[in-house]
Image 1: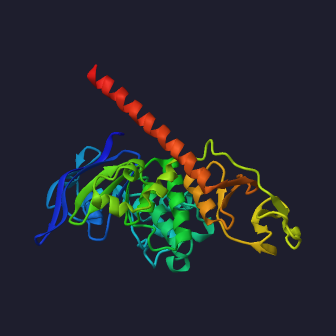
Image 2: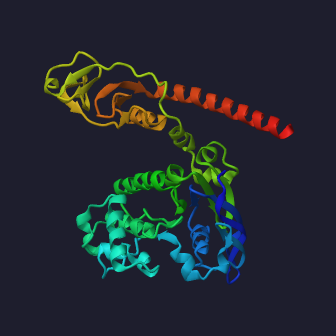
Image 3: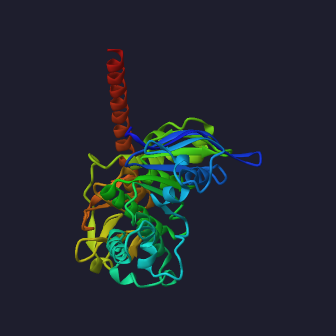
Length: 374
């Protein structure tokens, strides 16, 4: 593990006899995303807010970069961290640029310098420059969340605290924001604590995942692959879900997966009887647009996701299971047809990859034991 940036040491929070967080001890490694996940009322948001002292611990210690958080003035501590919340929390009477410039201004930057930094960050979070003069009410929900992320980054803090920042937007925008966060993290390498109730979001984003149980108990702390492979108890297993094997396929790419040639017809030929059970219909550029076959003469049958070569076995299996023909359509980066795969082939390949990974883990464990015993 990387050296810790944030550490909880036996931290508890009690409200009038009700324990919200129960003797929490964990580390958030420097430059990684640590996700707090769990059901409502499990203490994950309370734990996050204790880091910047929006909530004060009842007992225990939280250190940030080796310093006890309680030894630092709360306003200065908060301005040293980025904070992104569910509803963006933008000031409605200020423009986008002035919202982003808030923390640099509080930290003593001139208005000109703070606004220049804000304009730079519009590009960083994927917003056009011409939105800088608008007000929050003139933006979509996804745009507001991007502004919230830009504001959190404005003072270039080493730590970002993110409290369910994408839960209030629709699934398509949420996916875009998740991918944007991963891109930003690759570029910036912040230490991030991210709170969510969505296990899929946790697995997608987290380098480490802390699963909280009701009562503020830390049930398991693990990497996403280990969490799905080996839940520590019935609670974690139930929270992760019965389809964790399907999610686990997201950790294996499709390297070595055999792709079979497919019968094809051009879109202009769909009206002609096709002498095969199923054929992929292609547009003029060789991109799949649907299926046709003997049972559907003259008909374009839609349905089925596309699997982009090089992505995960989860994507490949989803393409096969959602396809009307039972075969997933595989495309290249330009969206052109490469071939098809069946669910049976994907599952067999996943089993081979899983066995290989188990052998590698066993070999690594044996190597560590040898070093420790030397």
